[in-house]
Image 1 (cartoon, one colour):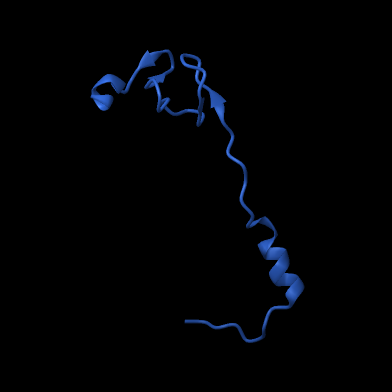
Image 2 (cartoon, one colour):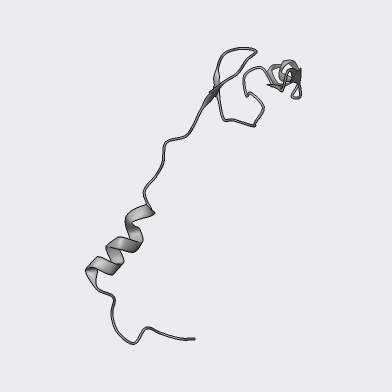
Amino acid sequence: MPNPKRRHSKKRTSTRRAHDHLHTLSLADCPNCHEKKLPHRACRKCGHYKGREVIDTAAKTA
């Protein structure tokens, strides 16, 4: 397994790590119940996706 011959400089290391930070989540409003949800996913509160119910939330709460 190859190993580095020389150590990387601090600038090269920090340049590589410049894009390792966390990003904020992009949230969309559910058109049915207006709760915040991840885009292209079913709503956790009402279970709707693209205008139809895909998750039965009534059975989940009972």
